[in-house]
Amino acid sequence: MLFAAKSYNFAATGSRERIAWLFLLPMLAIMAVVTGFPLLNTLWLAFTDASLTGRGYDWNWSGLENFAYLIDDKNFRVALGYTFYFTIVSVAIEMVLGVLVALLLNQDFFGRTLVRTLMILPWALPTIVNAMMWRLIYNPEFGSLNALLLQFGLIDFYRSWLGVPGTAMNMVILADVWKNYPLIALIVLGALQTIPKDLYEAAAIDGASPWKRFWHITLPGILGPFSVALILRTIEAFKVFDIIYVMTRGGPADTTKTASFFVYQESFSYLRAGSGAAYAVAVTLLSAMLITIYIIALRKTEHAP
Amino acid sequence: MMERTPLASIFVYGAVAALVLSILAPVFWLFIMSISSSRELTELPLHWIPQEPDFSRYIRLFTLQEGSSGREFLYAMRNSLSVSLMATGVALVAGVPAAYSFSRYPGRMALLYGVLVTYMMPPVALILPLYMVFSWLGLLNSQTALVIVYCTILLPFVTWLLKSGFDGVPIEIEQAAQIDGAGLFQTLFYVTLPVAAAALGTAVLFALLLAWDEFFYALLYTSDIRAKTLPVAIGDFAAGRATDYGLISAVGVLASLPPVLIGFFLQKSLIAGLSAGSVKG
Image 1 (tube, chains in turn green, brown):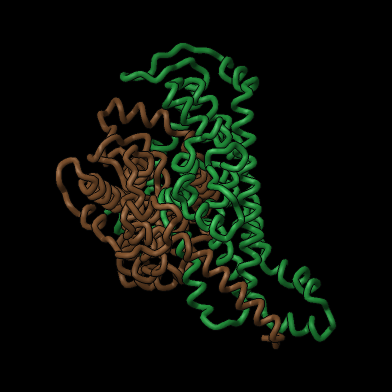
Image 2 (cartoon, chains in turn green, orange):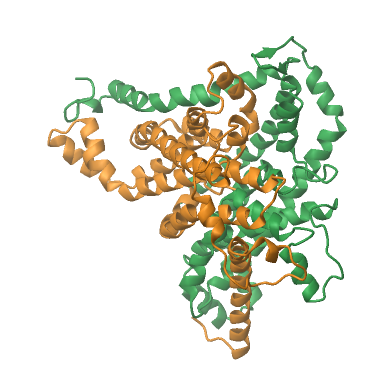
């Protein structure tokens, strides 16, 4: 029996190695088929002029043509710009709001446990339901946001929140922030609770101002989980697709068309597989840079005592 | 805790009230819309509370009549359920031994990080080839295709999460079992897994949530009630011409119930799972 090795038989190095790989085999086999192969295939496609047809690709080599085109493509640069805008603004607000709310939830108040539980609601709401919910709230004719602002006298007429370039992206960001900042708050709160209380008391006795206490005690205490959450959110935000698809479909006038949406359209609306793949490779490389930063940060925290 | 001035207390309670309101109001409004009549929802100025709650949409969504919105909804619910469960099952079958190997036979760190990288990679890197392969195999618009493609997300995630779960199981109890003559598989099934049951449960629930939430692949690879999942169906409802906002809201409420319940249930293990990389946006 290969697997039912008795007692310390499998402690021998050679057989240990074999068992280790054997246990990894199903996972590696599946990942090779569903991730490895498609990834390589995308890379190959990027160097062809393939088009998506009903029966396979119709293709010829085109060398670096796709990439030459991509570099000069103003529309792609614009889409990347919107992606960076969405990523930076939404993640920045989520992180700041997350820390502020975590500090609030770390105070003593009546009903604290209940409020903390409530923070899970936006996180657990499916992304698509969140997008649809905000789309209805923003509705230009009957939406509750318009009704609310009008009844409070903050606007004079109903606005088309998602129909105006410039405003639309910010409204999408608001919906994204509402869903994602509570999670940051919970992560930071978890870190806050590991900071010993007597540190604060000692600092207060020494006459340190609240601001100083925040910089020298609170911030170092939450920095680890905070930066991991920051990088993970950045990686996620950069891939944004779902919320855009449901709320604006990239409009108005392509002002919410992000990189993922761009690749999606190039590949599946215009059926240009070759150039679609080239854009996909570019987006993947940018993501890879973020992921590398994450791995480095992760290894650092793991090596720290 | 240090003493608070009355002013500070007022500030804290004011901020908490604003926080609770901002979290609850949109969700509460979603529910209100689902029980308001279409007439009330399109009336100006808007009445906030319906005069008579109208639960007819929920009844309509649970009828299977040909061509009804209920049919579309119920099939989508079925597809979401079975795809999530099957994909989680596959991820577990391959992920448990892989995580065990990473935990107990260290030395393949690069590979472990490679697993993490594939989890974070943007789906656009894979969509075209997967589409072609599914097309060749006649798997487009099938649950099977979604189960396969969800492995790209769930398998690395489950492996990563379970690896840290197994790390928490003391090796001594495994050695004790082996001295008693248990084989490797027996040790894994009867000793390690039961001890790591909490981590296993967390991994299963997170995997289900991830699959339930997935939209991009489902949008690309499914086209009708045979395989469309709830997120895609909701996208359709929301984009439909004849828009009954109340109906869309009711679908949203129903689609949110399972993950929200799981979310509250997961509360304790949430932070642990999050640090393992489930900050999914």
